[in-house]
Every structure is written in structure tokens, then in C-alpha cells.
Length: 89
Image (cartoon, rainbow, N blue to C red; front, side, top):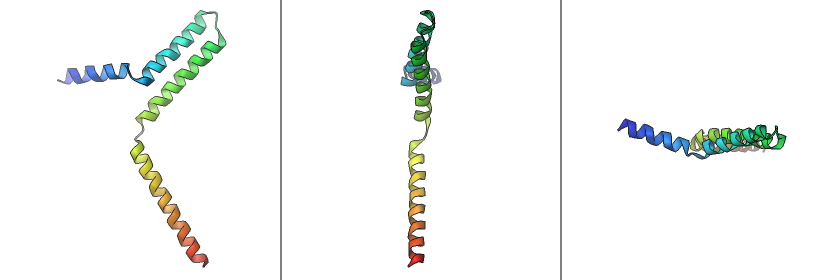
């Protein structure tokens, strides 16, 4: 049972968007070097690879916790501003 879960997670990792985008980026870089170091091909490959790494980290982040933290900070700020406005009156 654990083998099938590991195999399924490996397959889902291989066919994930960041991994496939990374492969496209590496392919662009290899193609750019193979064609006599075409700078634009290599540049686009580097941009694609960096974008796929960024996408990986963005997907990995726990966004629900992030938005809850931002909401708490907003509420604390609004409370502090209301208290300051009350003190000025």
C-alpha cells in the first residue's frame, strides 16, 4: 500500500506544473547552448526555470494561514487607529 502511494506521489510530482515548466526551461537553455550559445534562448530558459522554482514555493506556502495572519494584522491596525482617534477627541 505504501508503495502505491509513493509511486502515485512520484508520478504526480513528475507531471506537476513546476516540474514540467522546469524541464521546458532546461530544454531552452540546452537548445540555446547547442545552437552556438544563442543568448535569448538561454535567457528565456533561465527565466522559465526561475519561474518554475518560484511557482513551486508559492504552491508550497500555506495561504489560509497567511490570509488569517493578514486579517489579524488588519484588525489590530484598525483597533489601534480607532483608539488613537478616540484619544484625539
